[in-house]
Image (cartoon, rainbow, N blue to C red; front, side):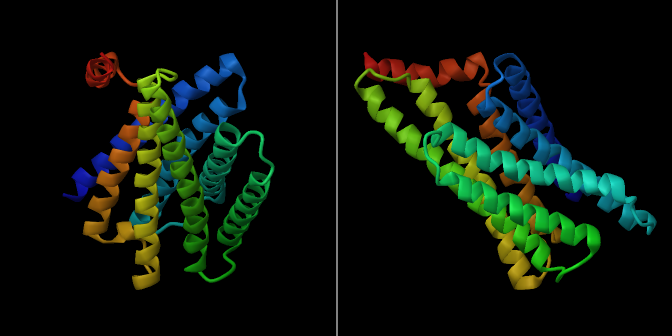
Length: 243
């Protein structure tokens, strides 16, 4: 069963790499910070998690110390994920506001401190994951709330014929994906506080993380690049209700 959970996580990472790569390809044409933030957010967490997980498995199976350079690259990618999460939420949903600057600065400072503490082996070991996951939790909660708030606003406009139903649906899916990711983070924080170990350290936690993570990645993939069959499936009931 552990192999099945690991396979599910690989599928999740593959979906994230697909979404991130396609979004960055769009950014290459538009040069808009929103596309860059979304693509960097999704792609960096997938690549960073895969790299750090691979290094952890290699170190535990061989008993050898992992070279610091690939470890630092993995940590840096995880920090890029958090920075892009905060900047993207700001620039997409609150572009004219200045208060998110404080949140972005906070996230960057804490991620830098987290990365430095791991690379220099300083600070309490338990505080490090709590610090990083706490920063991610705030970012995911903010992103999820903004998505669902904006989706609800669009749904009200849909009833007046002022917005596209599929756009409202896709932003809602984006919010569900963010909240699913938040659920995994909160469960991991609970495991860290309660037992001092990460959620994936137990078989049950590994399965739970794998399947919720797959749901989150799937909803994000449908939100950004829905196949035509899915668009027709969603548009069917909407079209009937409109008529």
